[in-house]
Length: 81
Image 1 (cartoon, rainbow, N blue to C red):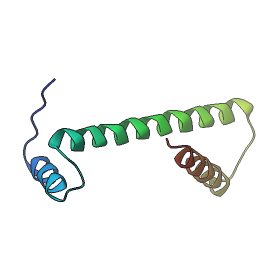
Image 2 (image 1 turned 90 degrees about the vertical axis):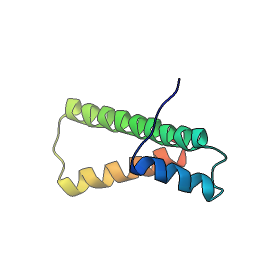
Image 3 (image 1 turned 90 degrees about the horizontal axis):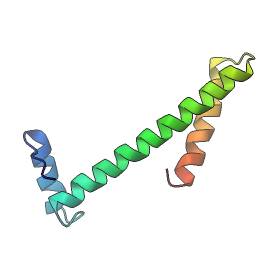
Image 4 (image 1 turned 135 degrees about the horizontal axis):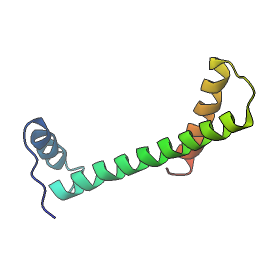
């Protein structure tokens, strides 16, 4: 598959390769797609947690929900997601 990147993204990719952080434009795009996949996995997991919590019922304050979600995000990040 070939993808054309134009505008500011093309410059961003060129800078990332020029910095030496990536070997090629393909590597930059692959890293971006990997981050997107990781983000989608996190969102799916968070949605599942919210759905489970709603199914259980009960009430939590916004602060309690934020704390639970923040902890779960830390767990997911530690596991590499």
